[in-house]
Figure 1 (cartoon, rainbow, N blue to C red):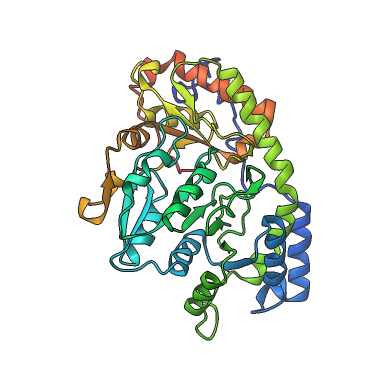
Figure 2 (figure 1 turned 90 degrees about the vertical axis):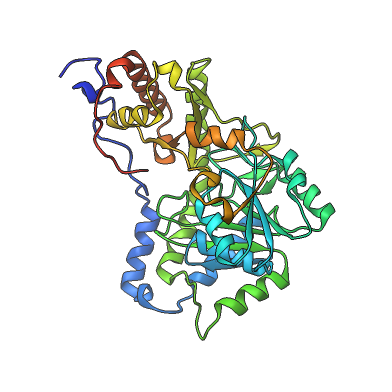
Length: 391
């Protein structure tokens, strides 16, 4: 092995053990699993764990109603149904978003209306939402992505003036705060995810939040078919409260790591972190996102850069595909130009959150790997990188 060379060129990886695993070991979760095994609650329809999780989420989010679901994607569908979205309606969302949000809207027979993103934060541009509103607009779906947040106070003011309900997708931003209020509770309906890679994980699962009795009633009428058609199991529900307890400390650690990485990047050409321009916020990082400039790396493509970083053990990956680039034009309506969303499709890189729990170690390793890739970018362009799983 040659010291200082990138791993793809035969060097020792910066992080030979590879990216951190998720979830991390949690003694409280282990204790719960042991109790489930001894009591038999793991295999029961009803054992009280779902009810206790609902109560915990209600307290933590200061919200009247919580409905558990089988996934974050299912939770978004239920939120749409709770607002009576259906054929002939339009739902406004960011052109850069998780693709299941688009397909959920289309599945209900409604038309996704795609709006440009803010070129600094990568989030839905509130300045351009109003132009997308028509008489057919039934709802606005706003997702907090990659460690930044939608300007919910402005969005709720705009939507409220027009009488349009908002769905707040906090699947990447569980129990962060905007102006002192938990994410997921600004919208008329909010959703979070308990998916296997999420900040709170039960392998699968999600939840819907609302203060509105009518929304909860419609969700229950749809899901109750003799039993719950979109259930979270008792075993899944039982492992989540201990993670709620550890979430604030983990958030503080992730935030410290992000601060260290961003500070050491300085004016580093080629990687520009997503900005979080909102004041009075306590955000979190399911992913830390960057705008990638290949010219700063001698033309190394985003995919080649990601492969080289991942070979060093750093969990870097491309962002989402922008929705207007992966769906036929007849399936959506776009409102105005989508220039920044086009750039996001080409240029967004993300760093996965388990890596962010190591603060100084993570910051040092990230910058060391970055320096290696930059110095050897010309040669790395010629290397056939191995196929790797996405994080």
